[in-house]
Length: 243
Image 1 (cartoon, helix red, strand yellow):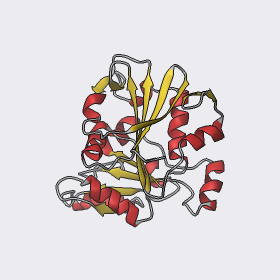
Image 2 (tube, helix red, strand yellow):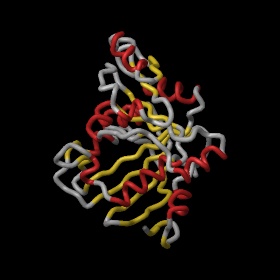
Image 3 (cartoon, rainbow, N blue to C red):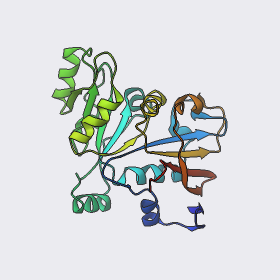
Image 4 (cartoon, rainbow, N blue to C red):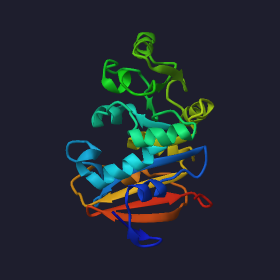
């Protein structure tokens, strides 16, 4: 991987982790991959099909020192999220900094209807959080709790993204990587909760769900860096004044 802006040069893994450092203890970054035609998922409905090994390395870097990975229910299902576990090298650094061994998976769901026996809920290094609504059925919420998740009501009919972020911060989970999907990202942007946008431009066409809808409400940001690998461009935009 190489950096194109601001200072051209080759990057190794420590360099990549440094490029995706956290400006402060409370910071929300949003991550998204987009094809050349604006699609944010391939024909199979998965973003992974327009991704690349370098894109997945960048995603790992954005998670490496995150406190929480925030993701919507539809994306968890479509992308078949695995258990959230830290790499051993990351775990050592995290624990030295007073963080949990791995990021907490925080799933946004209005209904709490999942296969709660899935490994992402039962085998994650830290108990997942389920951010849901008062309207979610009691038995469904109970099933999530029985699987070892902490169930938190952050809205009545819909999850309130501002309450969700505030709830994470109350638990000491201030460094948040939001991985979508497009609906959640759009709500986060509309509520002005996003401090950083990490956008991958991939050489893919024929995708689904245009990025323009997901990015509606994006506030003005400045370009912090541009990286390149596997024919993809990796851009990082931050709020003015952000690192």
